[in-house]
Structures are given as C-alpha cells and as structure tokens.
Length: 102
Image 1 (tube, rainbow, N blue to C red):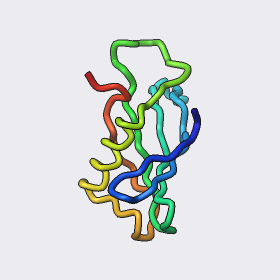
Image 2 (cartoon, rainbow, N blue to C red):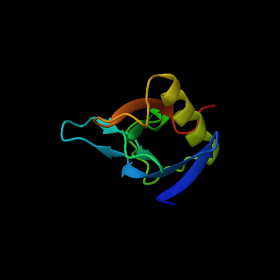
Image 3 (cartoon, helix red, strand yellow):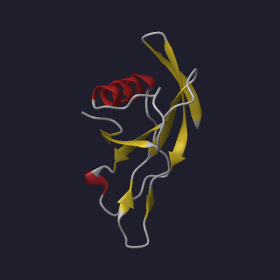
Image 4 (tube, rainbow, N blue to C red):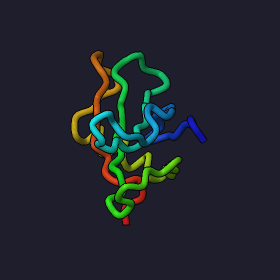
C-alpha cells in the first residue's frame, strides 16, 4: 500500500510514500520516508524518515511495509518532539528509527 490513513486521539492523518529506500550518488543508503498530513489542517506536514536495516549491508530492500501501529507510534513521537500540524512552515523531518523495531 502506498497511502492510507490512521486516527490518533480523534484526529485523522493521511500518509503517503515520500521516498522509497535508495542509494544516493555518494553511495549512502537512504531509508523509506513517509509523508504525513493532518486531514483537517492546512499546516505543516511531517516526514517520517526510517533507518536502513544495518543487517542488510549492501542489500537495498525493494519495498518496506510499515504497520499502522508503527505509524501511530512514530506520529505520536513526532508530536512529542515538537511537530505541530496546525502551525505553518516547511516539512518537519523526524528520524523514526527502524521500520520494524525488535
């Protein structure tokens, strides 16, 4: 799935894939990134940047799946760290850690 919605504390959030995992021109891996927007807000959007799994050295995953539970955890963590979807401004980038923490 490349987009969807989750609800947290009676607020609806839409999400979509912002960036698939890929290599940069310098050979640095970039993980999956997901763009999140509060449905009833025209404010700041959130970009959840997930880390590359270090056990897959040299192997770039084709697709990563993030559960709704994990998305909700990350959105709540971003809110706790200062993201406010009702304020205006540039994207708020949040280091979300691994896609599937153990």
